[in-house]
Length: 192
Image (cartoon, rainbow, N blue to C red):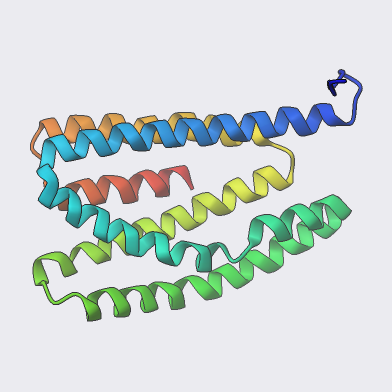
């Protein structure tokens, strides 16, 4: 016997929201795959390796910046809209205090551990991108907690392929690795 969600079923909003969030994830992953292929072909393996190295440091710090906010917000909004708003304000305040400390730690660790001065400056742009990505993730968490998965899909469909398009044009114009990281950072801040 198969379980199907009918329009009045309590499973319908769960399946709809889950499907929308899965679509957002697919768009993001497909765009990232195309981005990697584009950058490797345009910059070569050596420069792509540097870009991946810089991005990896940012990804390492992202969970600390997100601090489980998606789970906390979803749980609070599941209790009541008022509890959700209170949690949103508390987490926003905490994020505002945490962000400068986390970015200082990020820069101290990355620049302190990287002996190559030609790579060190890239971490400043990575910090800018990390902050923007953290705020964009925050927005997505609030949208999901408020059952606005459709908005998350719209943001992903707009900004992930949008960054790919801008990066393609910039690489065709001969942009450097620094320029590519700047595009990445600006894209995350625009999404936030």
